[in-house]
Image (cartoon, rainbow, N blue to C red; front, side, top):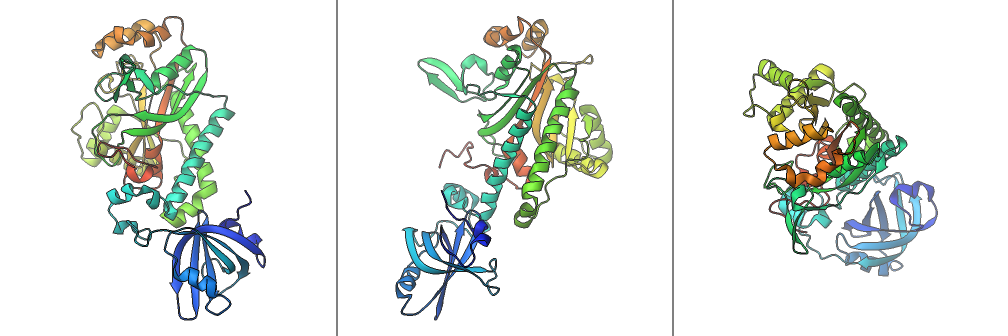
Length: 437
């Protein structure tokens, strides 16, 4: 396609061009009409004098509605009087390619004038706002940069199944379905299949894909369908290797995002993309609990895990002491972690959470890869090992030491842009009370 976008107009002054877009604004004055065309890259003023020559164009503009789509042919001119980029298009023809109803169900100029739930009902309109367009361009680059890092470091991309046998996932937090008369469920995570890849001799793997959690949670940071970036690597010596790998990957991704969109993000969102240059601090769970008690006079209700307030305070600690928006919390108790996390000599897990700007965005760990120990840990968690035969088989025939992590993409993007709700950071949100659009 040879479509011309607003961002490219500097190359077309004093030329006749054709440009397409939405009708962003209309000013129909006594002697002149001003039409603002908007595409995904910017806005352009179209100026039409009211006279006999332009009578057909004047009639078209007089009957236009906001958010209709148009194709405009005309000459692009420089004009210092035009605040919108110093350029205007003098049209010779306007074609209305689709017509919008005159009354919009939500306010596109000021999102706060419409209820969030109403905006989610009309998400296709809500997404037309400039900040949403920029947000998802940045998410695209975020995923692209992750893939660049992984493929340049010889990772293999996998695509694990999203329909699992009922025995493949434990607990009540799964969406159950009938699979040709057999019980099945939607996958909560590709965890088992990532580990299968390690047993298969795939040294390093990644996957970006959906995961499903039947959690009846109505918080600002939970969803029932999420997009996850999963990583697993073999031949590690400790969980420190896993943290190093995630830190290096995030440093590459954040720097690329800063270089490409940093200025635009600051202009539109008023947010500086976090500088990942400094090493991410690493604090054990026990030490973190001590810091929370002694420095913040805060004791959470969960003795063996973190609550949201504690995550926020530890991120404040990391910012104040290390000038970092990131902090690793390590060595969680086994009671708060899955059975497949490796334990150290003290019975604590070789695991971590990565917190970012007040919220956990990653859980990672070194996995237990010894069959006998792994089976015992399954039993200690109160799980019948027979229900995990297919998984335990991975470890019967030799399996490299390995570990990995998973990043919730909407969460990290939400925190990066300082958006207060995951619903705003998801293309189409799914939650306990939302199954449409």
